[in-house]
Every structure is written in structure tokens, then in C-alpha cells.
Image 1 (tube, chains in turn yellow, purple):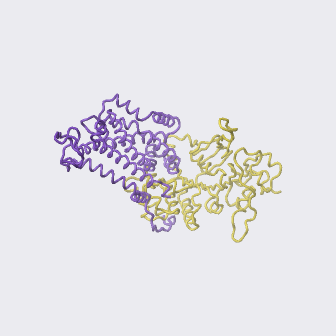
Image 2 (image 1 turned 90 degrees about the vertical axis):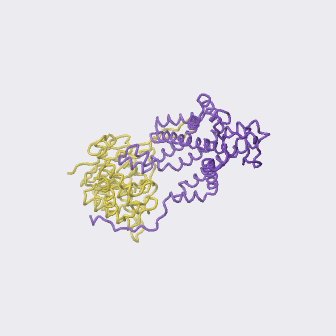
Image 3 (image 1 turned 135 degrees about the vertical axis):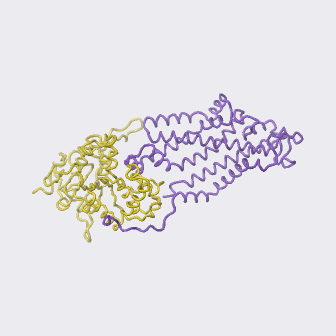
Length: 326
Length: 295
């Protein structure tokens, strides 16, 4: 049993909205639940993929995990301590041990700094190297992500999308982290670049025992990179477990639908999901997937199922899981 | 190490960095170039001219009192004491331009500092600072200036300080807006995640990205500072004779407006040229530094 690194305990993040009323007469208060009762644990050396449609709360989950947003309810722990309460040495350690690759790689790099300074920043901040050794280390990292030494002097605006992504990954590796948290780190890249970066991440994970938390909407990427998968729908994790088991035998109808929606060679997409993801404002009672679920029964519209363990390290939030003999 | 290494990617055909494109856009901006030429002429004329020009600005030459321009030894004519108008314009230009620049630097520093703190920290502190800025903006500038000038011993430095005190608010607003947006950008958040100090994030991450609008505001501030100095000096509260400034030259020319109009026309032209010149440069910079053009 390895040590738990991250723990999310019934995390809820809701935003209060006002509006809709006339001037001076604000409309009724409404709540947008971006995250609702999320439970997730990540142990050292795990690789977890967070999968879900846009708007399912993946990025909010990440922000809570990183302590950028404090949850309205529940707690986010790192090494047993609340991430928003980390102080002094523990905070510095967290900042070094957890590195992030942002969804918008270009936006995460200061456009006024050359690549050398961008990658050197974490090295210098955490005093991992000093003097000329900093530059050598930056070169080493660039080499690792497949960029030539000439990149050192370039500004982000002079690099292509794939190159910027590599710089962002090199920068994340610069602090010699234990965990890399990546938000859509390879989406929108051409397939060969994507494959190269994925291979790099897998290699790093095996060799250095990195923990990976990877947000993606691509089940293929998730299956290649991660041992664990967590499927999110409307601010809640609806199914978790080992990637292989889940992709081979999904228990939640939503997971099934996601799998069906994956394009396959020469085959029409079997059963596209009906309708849009509903608005997370003022959710109706019952299961939040009921409105789009092909297996919904009247009970689904009354009881909101919680994420319950279903054996073999899996958990599902459904009253009529596909895996149940029925 | 070798397995984890990706095949090296060649880096070719590089787009020029944004800053060079901005310089090119500025150089191609016709009005901005006109402004640059105007300001260069004024600055070189004021600071180098006295070394080349044969007349001293303080020498009294009673034989040539009220000499008409181009009709005697004095190029631009002479004043009631027979002092050379051209020489006086140059000395006055040194004073007016120096006051304008110094006031710009001071007001930009103050405005940037206050705007940066307000924008970066936000909340109660930022709100309080920005309401103070609003309050300052509510005063009619010129009355504030005159009130202050009436209480303070006029001199080059005090006038500079007073002008800066009444014109830092625009810069503060611009900087506050920039900091507010830039601190939410991913690169600022990334720096916070690394654990960089506030000072580092403000100076190394955010400020370099906010330079463009600050430069524009500062340039336009020079024009305004020169104009304000002229107002105050014209009304007699600013730079005191015998030290000339373009403003107080206008003041002393008042009573001869019909008999010797050139005494008012040339300082007036100098002020107009300086103010329009800096405004042209400011407009050119605004267009050239527009980040939307770098997308």
C-alpha cells in the first residue's frame, strides 16, 4: 500500500449567481454547482485520467486539487494536509513536488521571457542548481522533450503550438516534481507529436515513479497513459476504477455512451448521446444523467445515487449499473 | 536517459519577435514620424542651439528693442528690452521640456506603483486606492494646480512636483486595469504555483507585459505636462522670470499683443509643436503596440 498523495473528501464548489431580475430588483439567487460531492484519492505512483465532456467540472477539480480555488464544502488534502492551509516549508515542498501543465500552454508562458528564463525559473526558485549549471540543466530538459539548443533564446511567440507544448512540459519537469498534473496537455496536437509526448510521459512515469493526473476527453489517451480512470459528469465522478476494466466493461451508462461516441475506423458512431449536457444551475432531483440515459427508470428521477464501491477497485454512481446481472 | 528523449525537432522559419514587428509598425506610422521629427527639432534646438546661436538670452540690447523678426540682427526679433527672442525661446524650451519630462517620469512612477498595487492585490486595498484616484480625477485639474501653486514657492522642481501630483491618475487607472487582467492569466498563475514572491510576479511577470499601455500613457502625459506648465506659468504662478519658459513668455507678451505680436506667436507655436508632437508619437505608439496586431 503506497502513501496517499491527494485526497478529495466530498469536495463541493458552487458559485452563487444573481441576475435575471430588473434593475434594482435582483433576481432570485441561484447556485451553480461546478463540483458536487467529489471523492477521489491518488496514491504515489498512480496515474489517473479524468475524463468527461466539456463543462463536467474537470478543470475546476484541478484548480481545487492545486489549491488555486478553495472548495465551498469538503476538503482537498495533499499528504494529509489541507492544500489551502499549507504553510512555510510544507507549502514550498508542495510547490516543488507538484508541477502543472496548463491547458493553454502558450498562455501559461510569459510572452516576454525567452525559453531559457522560462524553464530556469522553477530551477532558480527552488535552488535546484546554481550558476552555469542552470543553463546546462535547461539544455538537458530541452533535449529530453526533443527541442534543440537553439530554442533557448526564442520567445514563445516564435514557437509552434507543438513546440510551446514541449516547453511547457520541460518547465513542469524542471522542478523535479513527484506529480505532474496536466490539463489537456496533448489535445489539439497532430497525432505524431501527441504520440511522442505521450511516450515521453509514460517513460518518465516509469523511470522516475512520477504520479500523473491527466485531464483529457480522449479515452484513447487515457487508456494509453493511465492505470486509473475517473469519469466525470456534471461536477460529479460517476465511475472510477482500473482503466482496462472500465473500458472493457463500463458500469455506468454514461461511460458506455462515451465509449460509443469514440469514432472507430469505418464504423458509424453507434449511439450518440441524446441532448446536451444540462445546465449545472438548479439541477433537478434524482440522477443528473437521467435525462439523457437510455436505461433510466422512474426511480432514477427521484434518488440521486452516490458513488458506491462495486468490487475490484471500481466504484459507480448508478442504481442500474450495466455490470449488474439484470 | 536516451529512451526518454524525443527525436530533436528542427526549428526553422522563425517569425520575428513581436517587439520588432511593433518597432516596424511605429516607423511606418507617418504621423508618429512627423511627431518624432517635431520633438527632435525642439529638443536639439533647445539644448544644442544655444551653443551655436550667436546671441545670449539675457543680453540687453536697447538699440534693437521690438526688432521685427527677419528685419535685423535678431532672427526672430527682440523683446521690449532688446533681448533676442530666439535665444530666449531656446532657454525657455530647456525649462519647459525638462519640466514636462520630469513631471512625466514622476507621474508615471507614482501612477504605476499605485495602479500595480491596486490591480494586483484588488479587494479592499485596491478598491480604496482606486476610489482615491476617482476622487482626485473629480477635481478640476487646473484649479487644483493653481491652488497648490499659490501655496507653494514656485520653482522648477516644485512646479514639476505639482504637475506630477495632478496627472498620475490616468496612468494608475491604465496600470490597474492591466494588472487586474494579467494576474488572472495562466502565466501569472503558473508563477504563483511555482511559489514566486509577489514582488517577482509584479516586476518580472506582469509589469513587462503592461509596458505598452504605460509607455503610451506616459508619452501623452509629457504633452499634458508641457501644457499644464504653460497654463500655470502664463497665469504667473509657475516658472518665475527672469528664468523663461514658453508659458511665462506668453504672459509677458500679453501687453504687446497688438504692437509686437511675434512675442506671443513664437512661444505659442513652440507649445503647440511640442504638444502635438508628443500626441502624434503617443498615437503612433498606441497603434504600433496594439497587441491585437501580434496575434
